[in-house]
Image (cartoon, rainbow, N blue to C red; front, side):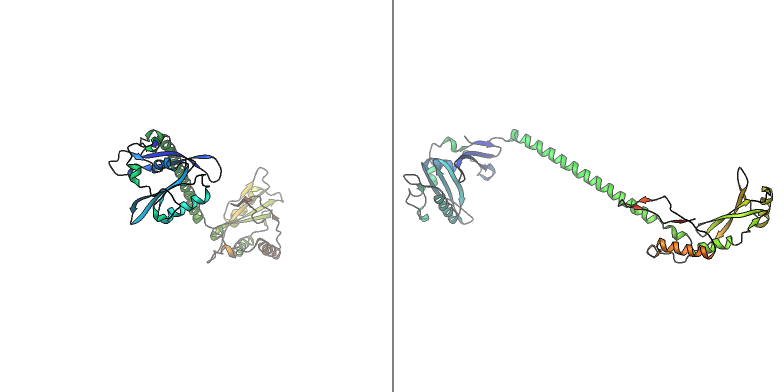
Length: 345
C-alpha cells in the first residue's frame, strides 16, 4: 500500500539491484502543489503499467509537451519488479531502453514491449496510450496515492531543528562574546603600552649623570670634625637628584660636633645611624642636564659596552667598582626568561 506524508504521496516499491540479487525498496514522492487543482484521485503511472509487463519488459508512453519538447515516460520491470520509472526526451528514453536491454537478460519467451513505432524497437505490442491506462474503471490498489497530514511526523523533526538552532545561536553568542572580550583586552593593552614612557626619556644620559654626581662628589671634605668620609651614593629623578655622603667617627668626637660642622659648611642637617651613633652623613642636591634628543631604543649600547665604559671611567677616577647581578628577572609573553643587565655599585 502507498504511504502518505503531508502534501506528499509516498509510494514504496521493490526493485532489483544490478550489484546483487537482493530485492530493495524504493520510494517515490509527488507534491500536491504541482498537481492541477480539483484533482481528487492520484495514481502512479509506473504501477498502472507494471501488471502489463509480466514476466518482464518495458513500456514507453508519450506524454504531453513541455516547453515545445516532447516528453516520454519509460517504465521497465524484471520478474514483476519495477526497475525503471523515469521521464525524458526521446534521446534520453532511447538511451534508457538500450541500457535496460543491455544489463538485463531477456526471459524465456522474450520481453513484453510497448512503445511508439518511431522508437524502432524490437517487435512488441505497439504503443501504449495514456487513455488505455487512465480510462479504466478499476485501478490496482497499489497504484493509488492518498495524501494525509504530516503534522505528527514533523514534531520530532521540528524539535530537533529547534534544538540545533538554539545550540547554534548559543555557540555564535559565545564566540561573539569571547571575541569582544579579546578585543577589549587587546585595546586595553595597546592603550597601556601607548601610555608607558621609556624611563630613559626622563633620565640624564650616562655621561651627564656621572659628571653631575662627580661635580658634587669632588667638593666633599675628606673629614668633617674628625669624622672620615667612607661612601657616597648618587641617584637621579628627572633632571634633579641627590648625592648621599656617609662618614664614620674614628677620632672619638661627638655627634654634636659633627652635626654642627655640617650645618656650618652646607647649611643642612645631617643624619645619624642609630643606635651606636658612630656613623652618619648628609645629602646634597645634584642637577643634571637632560638631552635634547633622547636616545632611541635601537641606539642603546649593549650591556658589555656600558660596563667597559663605566669601568674605564671609574679607574680613571681611581674608584673601585663592583658588579653585582640583580635578581629581578621576569618572563616575557613568549615564556622566555629576561635577565636585566648588571648594576654597578
